[in-house]
Length: 175
Image (cartoon, rainbow, N blue to C red; front, side, top):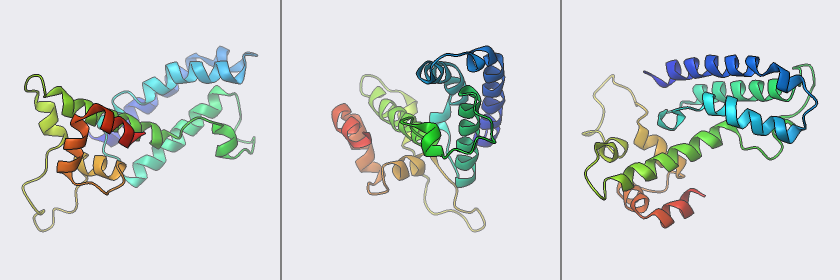
C-alpha cells in the first residue's frame, strides 16, 4: 500500500476514534489529561505503521494538518478559536517530528536485528538501488533517502548503517 493510501485509512480511523471519545473531550478534564488520552488513543491510531512511510512535502503537510485538527477536537477548540499552532501544541512535538523520530528508531532497530541471526529487514531498510534511474523514471523517494534526510543529509548509507548498529551512538545521533 502506498503511504498516501495508508495515511488516508489511518486518518479515517483516527477521526473515528476521536469522534467516539467526544464525552472525554467535552468533559471538564484538564488539558494534561485530555492530551494523555489523545496520545494514547488518537495519535497511536493515526501513526500506526508511520515509521515505514516515505513522506513527500505534500503528504507531510496533510499529516500535520490532520494531526492539528484532531488535537483541536481533543482539546475542544473550534476552528474559529484563533490560536497559533505554538499555543495549541504547547510542548507537544509536531506530527512530522514524531514520524521522523519513529522512523529513525525503526531504522536503528532493523539494522541491529540482523546481528544475532539473519533478518532481511535490515537489507530492505538500507537497500540502495542498482544505480541511476532510467530516463523518464524520475527521482523516486526511497526509504533510505528518507532516513538519510532525517539524519540531516550529512551521512552516507554505509556510515548510517555502521552508526545504527551501535545502539548508543545511534541514540545520540537521533536525539
